[in-house]
Amino acid sequence: MIRLHRNPTKISYVVRLIKNTYPHLSNETIAESIAYGTFVSLEHRLFYAETPKAACTTIKHLLRDLSGAPPIKYEIGPLHETRRDMFIHVRANIPLPSLIDLDNETQEHVLTDPSFLRFCIVRNPYSRLISAWRNKIIPCEPGYQSIYEQLVGAPPPIEGKSIPSFDAFLKFLSTEQDLDTCNPHWRRQLNHIFYSAISYTHIGKLETLQDTLLTLHSHLGNSISITPPTKNRSARDDQHGCLTESSAQLIYQLYKRDFDILGYASDSWHPFALTDRITPALVPESKFLDEIIERNLIISYLYEQYETQYRYSAHRLRDLLRSILLKI
Image (cartoon, rainbow, N blue to C red; front, side, top):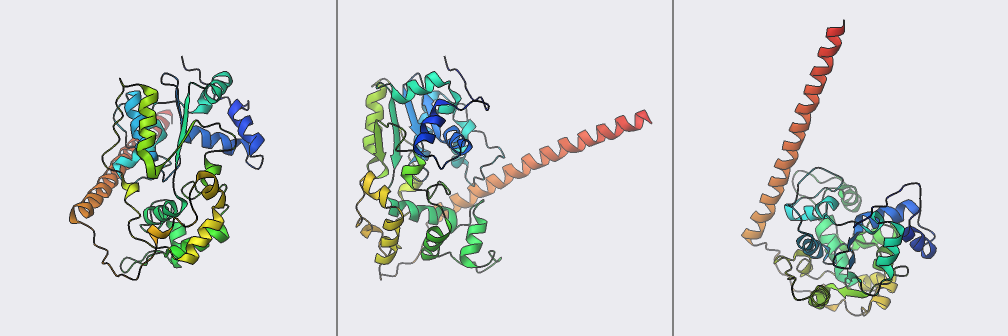
């Protein structure tokens, strides 16, 4: 039986463990990261720590299937998603406890028992940064408008919008971001997964995701099917190269420990190199319409929830005024 911990007056086992290795982080920062980004199935002896832009959408869908989750809810919250499939990242949509939800004894058991599969997935730092730039910065995703404006020097106009360059994004990372604690989409991966504090039994790679799926299948047994979503947007979002030798060198310097410890070569940037060949940036009509429809649906959901909340507030105000008038 799952025993929930989440006692704000007491520092949990996992927070103390991580704090000993990462003393510059506050207890609150560690707790928030663990609460959102870890998933535990005691039944299946699984512990997963997410890494944004490294197959986390795929794995979260698998965890939902494994836990028999109800349909995903599209609700207004702290995450500002623009596609229905991305609401998988709303923590409540995956009904598995985080590590910090468990009591101290169970936390220690999960992190030390050799029968547990403690896994995460990482990604080539070159392609991961390109993905973050293409998916978050260029389209000015909700929550990233201030960065977009900083990179191009102005808010997006109604027409004739500028595209933030990758070099400008790199300069922003190198001069204005603490890459050990910044936005998790471009935070150093070793810091994000608390590599030095957590004893992982499997560190998979996006580039060889099938190996991780085979490991999961072997751990869970043949009776449980592992079927990843057919659509993996992250695997295709860096098709067009944008790296020069100088930009690659800068990325390597900024993320050197990720490269060295996670096993990515400094010269692995060549598949993402900028070429002289001019290829028109054509988007298939089906993909274009898919994106437009998804965003329109999300806008509709937001309006519906806003209007429902507005009507509820108006009714409450009317009832309050009526009760005041009756007392006069």
